[in-house]
Length: 195
Image (cartoon, rainbow, N blue to C red; front, side):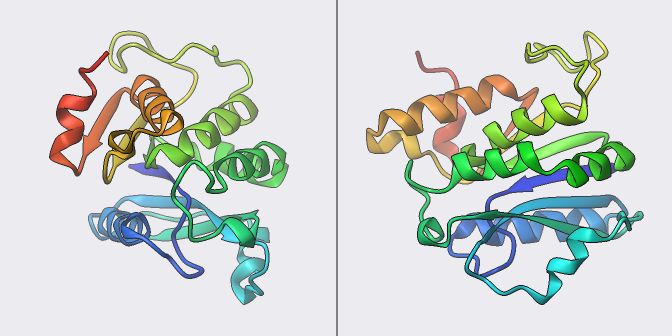
């Protein structure tokens, strides 16, 4: 299976459990024989020798992980609140035309998004990579064939419980955008059912 893996943090100084979860899941999927293309954030103040890998057309084969990075403000790196660089990650994804072509060539079977931060990034990529796709989110991945792969939302913890309306809105939108939700936190299981 080919997995497009979206995460704010993957390398470049991961700063939370999301980065650890992302790395573990991506490498675990590859170890199980899947091809994993990771799209992640990278602080714009990091000098990355691996950045040239973004320019490569080489896509991951079965059992491999390949990473493409999108620059976000270094001043916001290390923040997971509503002030994190989620908007900038989505804007970078929307403008990354070379990345759009790479994702189209990769032809993922599924998109796995880590935490609410990447839902706007998924929407931006979906509109650019699959421009003929509807703006509607599929209600059921098995009911109607879609022009784009299903989005699976993986949440490490529930931010909405902190009372921040942005968190509540973004987490709800991520759950609604997904055909399935993987909840690492037991609290998320019941959260998806709340008004």
